[in-house]
Amino acid sequence: IADASLAGATGHSLGGKLSLLAATLDPRIRATITLDPVDASMNCSPSDCPDVSALMPLDIPTAFLGETLDASGGFQPCAPAQHNYTTFYAGTTSPSLQVTVLGANHMSFIDDVASCGFTCGFCNTPTLDNATVNALSKAFVVAFYRRWLNGEQAYDDYLTGPAAQARYVETGLATIASK
Image (cartoon, rainbow, N blue to C red):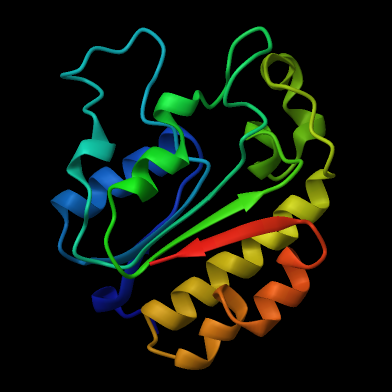
């Protein structure tokens, strides 16, 4: 049975930005975790694409998974440093989580980069495989919502604790910051 009082919002890229914007507008959203959100969009006016990082902090738990490979360089930065996940995290208060997935690019967070085609060619080439990024992302999303929507404090271990450190930090897959 679904419990509408325990809603969360998750999205990738512009969808991540929109997840955060939705959380500012809808009090039913009790937590949000985003995948490499970008606070800009090509050919988009400020009225159509508000600066959501300026709306931080939210009064709910937040988390941001992202990468820095596409912060600059290449044909076009897919997640420019001045608009990437770090800008959202910088404006948050506790509880908030920032996970930098090392070797991922902006498109690494989609389910199947092989089907991405031409669009994925704009981003820098990742050094971490798509399956690993997807598994890591799914693990963090599940642990985050189990912790912050269901109140299961044991999931802190998988977000910032020894299990997260052993699985992601000590293996060189990610860095983790929290407030």
